[in-house]
Amino acid sequence: PSGLVWFRRDLRAHDQAALYRALTQCQQVYCTFVFDREILDTLPRADRRVEFIRASLVELDASLRALSGHTQGGLIVLHAVASDAIPALAESLGVQAVFANHDDEPQALERDSLVRTRLAAAGRAFHTFKDHTLLERSEVLTQTGKPYSVFTPYKNAWLKKIDAFQLKSYPVERHAHRLAARPLEHGQPVPTLASLGFETTALSQRQLPPGASGAQQLFDDFLERMERYDDTRNFPAIKGPSYLSVHLRFGTISPRLLARTAHRLMQEGNPGATTWLSELIWRDFYFQILHHHPHVAGHSFKPAYDAIQWESGPEADTLFAAWCEGRTGYPLVDAAMAQLNQTGYMHNRLRMVVASFLVKDLGLDWRRGEAYFAARLNDFDLAANNGGWQWASSSGCDAQPYFRIFNPVSQSEKFDPEGKFIRRYLPQLARLPNAALHAPWLARPLELAEAGVVLGQTYPQPVIDHDTARLRTLQRYAVVKTG
Ligand code: FAD
Image (tube, rainbow, N blue to C red):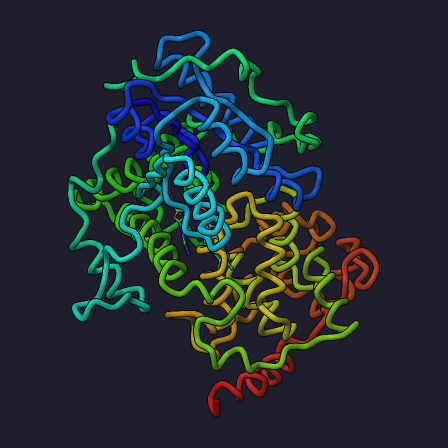
């Protein structure tokens, strides 16, 4: 029999579950990726992720050809509506089955169910596998068979369940001779950005090397400093985290490789590896939350929180625009938003700070921030993004209690004490002394003058007063207590 592997969030030729299964079950295996018009049509014409995917596909295509030994082999790349294109391609290739890895986002499930129905109508099978997460769906349940909604017990159960088999890689190479040559009618290479209707985002000028080789490069680099992750991960001016999130999102690196390495180092007593593995477990945690509670896409995990009245109207819209554009007058918040807008990445500590600021200082609905992140983050993943926003707004599972409200100035003093991060993204404040940098409106007039800062002109006055906002938020959230 022959099969077709449909790549989605798994853009690598090594240790890839669907690819491996297809190669072990079929004599001839074709590979495809669809630039799905239903997704692409909704995006702005310059989108770093489209460029990242495209560059990663060029490498994937080359890897598949190298593995198979065919110069004509490799990836069939289409630009179409995936739910139409996959059944049609399966038909034209005459394959018996399509192989793909699980994607549990609600829209992806809908798309896959349509594809499954259409394939079945033509007598073809659609096989899907776990690949994107280490443990998924209902693999980790409580003793009474319920999904966990609190992280620590989930993590303990996860650690008990994970074993060498789960972490083992799929030896794709062993069966790669079954990769089929790309049929002549699909002979075009990966389409250019322009032919997809997109503009370049100068991705190559970012420190974001795409593809499996880019991922490996970042991982090798991170391995050198993983031991210190615990001490460094909260400080945005330091190269602390791995920066692998976009690669995990698009599957240019195997999550099994990462977890296996971290797990081994943890057993050798590496403290950074223990904490880092925990972050990978958070990732699985939010995926299983989305799987068991798909209502979180759009609604609060805890329904009572949907009764909260958020600020709305033109004034709220002005505040929202100030947040998006990094003009709130709170330097750490503004520098963080500048990092997001300029690079598509934001440090985890800062994601927590700006999310809390949007919800608990500006009084705006967390869903507005969630949507802005979804549009801008290179690593945007519905499960983790929604989890992070619901954590910050206290509406989520295992979220921060509603009365815990980050103070954007003390967060700044604590996590960017020398203002290195702020100065990098807000050069207009660079000459302020450290003590004045975190709250310029409290600086002495002479300090401002010497640094060339004119509040309201070169840098905004704060758009709200944190202490007043804090009290309003406590009132706003009272409905949750009574509700
Ligand atoms: P590292 O610190 O090196 O962590 C390693 C990996 O663990 C990450 O790449 C990521 O895959 C995973 N991870 C780490 N922290 C978390 C977490 N809290 N939840 C789930 N997975 C985690 N992460 C995304 O991948 N996509 C998102 O859309 C996203 N949105 C977020 C929104 C908010 C409001 C918050 C507070 C967090 C969000 N995160 C999201 C989680 C986290 O901020 C990023 O995963 C992390 O900053 C990525 O950087 P890194 O790869 O250098 O992380």
